[in-house]
Amino acid sequence: MIIHLDLDSFFASCERLSNPALKGLPIAVGGRGDPFIFESESRRNIDITVENSGAFVPTVFYDAKSSFEEYFIEGKKIRGIVITSSYEARAFGIKTGMTIREALLRCPDLIVLPPNHLFYHDCSHRLKLYLQREIPVLEQYSIDEFFGDLKGWVEEKEVPAFIERLRKEVEERFGLPVSIGAAPSKWIAKMATGAAKPNGCKTLFKEDVESFVDPLPIDAFPGIGRGFSKRLRSYKIETLKELKAARHLLYRWKKPGIQLYHRVNGDDMEPVVPGRDRRSVGISRTIDPLFDREEARRRLIILCRHLSQLLAKIESRPKTLYLGIKYQFGQKAKRSVSETFIFSEYSLRRVVLKLFETIDIYRSLAIVRLSVRCGNFETKPLEGGSLFNHEKEVKMQRVWLQTAKVRTKYGVDSIRSGIELL
Image (cartoon, rainbow, N blue to C red; front, side, top):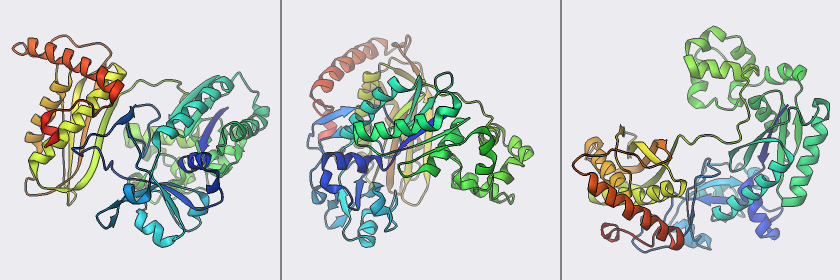
């Protein structure tokens, strides 16, 4: 059997560990698109990581501002969105992604807290170390989700008792409520977890899967988003039973359709993978509408600094670089480029700024989001690079690696280029 663990309202549960007085109260943890990263004033970065990725989970951690007013109020406006909420808050209709302003209108007594991501990562890491002792094959799917393979470890008939014991021990040892689902396949186990929430367990044996899955609407299945759902409904497919009967259609959609068909049927045979190869890492920020292209370049340089520090930490060198721009009225521009070069913060910045000049075709529109991503990794420095700039690129890589050591010790803001301070 495969099990899936999902920590209930994880960020909110962590906050209650820090402050038990919050138990039983409607609370929400809010977030913003990093209100500090583009400031000229230096701030001490606590850490930078790519572990425990997932929605609303950043790679760069700053000293948290302590109060609601300091973190969420800018000018006279309330900024930010809800990134998680307690079940007491959800009773008022508060959902992930809702603006803080709307959440407070729905629940005036709502306690809204700035995020403490470093603490959340620490809680997740400590739990992972414990689970690795209890489960032979463990995959961390996100900061608050895990898959485990119990085959050859726990007899099938004993799985319900095993996951109930595990749930209780996690809550007793760590103070974190968790829901656990078990099933013959990964994605059916994840669905079982959804049915077990909050703070419960559900086991689906092979003979139970069909009666559980078939009546559910297509939106209930993990990975069927709004676009895929709309596409399926255009073919009059409303339930998972109807989806399972549409093999011919899904196979026409090639890999995404074939993968979905087998996942819903529970015969996908996807293994629990303890460690996955990292395909890409990136950093992106949503910003207030920005017309000033010089300021946009300054912000790209800042993003490159943070991303290069991340790559120094994981000791990987990319061969493919990507830049994405989103404009005020929905227009987008994006491009990736694959080059053989000696990677450094300098080379990353050079390529990204060149891409910006090439793809920024809507010059009359304001920019509202910038994204920089690297992929196609090698775990050792690349040979090659520009024949004419080879000596300079080697020198800049040495400078970058020494700079990264200083930033690791004193913070990512400890060494910055002059243009960032303008």
